[in-house]
Length: 367
Ligand SMILES: *Cc1c(COP(=O)(O)O)cnc(C)c1O
Image (cartoon, rainbow, N blue to C red):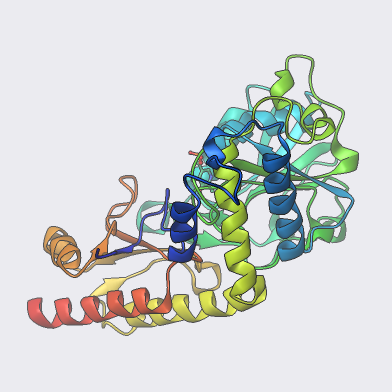
């Protein structure tokens, strides 16, 4: 068996020990005589799996007890509707545009409330979505039900490295973050967040699971049209078991949380992620223009690194030669073009080193 270095933006690579353990437990979980996929979600065994996953996640992210952890479905795109259905009360919501995901979020919210754009980094040509508007320049609404921020823009490769303190900006609105593509890669300052959501398939586990971490006082205001299965208060009151939860995905998430704890926790992974991102950005910046990343240095994502070859006619050769070395899924998103390396928690430093070596050698060969 040869495993590749998989730079997919999502569904993305999982830690090998997690896959091995899931394989070993596939037919018989802990002597139960059955695999996790076959268990009743109401049984004792799955109850343990769910409780373990939640407890581990709370530990890893230091989630205060005033927050509920909900295991939901539908992905972050469904949350683009579910959040306004639960939190907007049909009123005003504020949206910070940082890239393609936040544009999608704003568009969907308009179906349920008066969704305003309070800041945008749209710009002409190559400058589009390459810098972040400082929070002091956001035109926050005095009556907003919440402020939405995509804290890591997966496609454009921008990351908010310090969450805004909305109180200090004169707003009482809770901050809602879409943290799909960097959750568990760094700590979250919960004093600045009202709700955090994310699909699992970037940094957590299989697709099909969505995590929602929400301050308890925000529950209980869903619009009457909100589907019961998507009403956070209902989901919370039923311990994420109002409907059948994605049991397999929750189990794998729990194994990933165990793996993170084994690695030394989120703080240790954050240091590793900083080192990986630095290595890659330095290689790009030191290439004499052979490779270019256009994102402002302070806004560059540690997780998703888009880059372009100076000579775009070499794109196909770059990808083909990368594939030959076992470096896969490097093609950029169709809306941006070029390349994109997603280097989530499960990507080891050795994978980034192999990519950087390929970039250097490819430039030398084709220079
Ligand atoms: C991947 C991603 C999404 C979309 O997630 P789905 O699971 O397809 O709904 C939304 N937002 C961000 C930031 C993402 O990275």
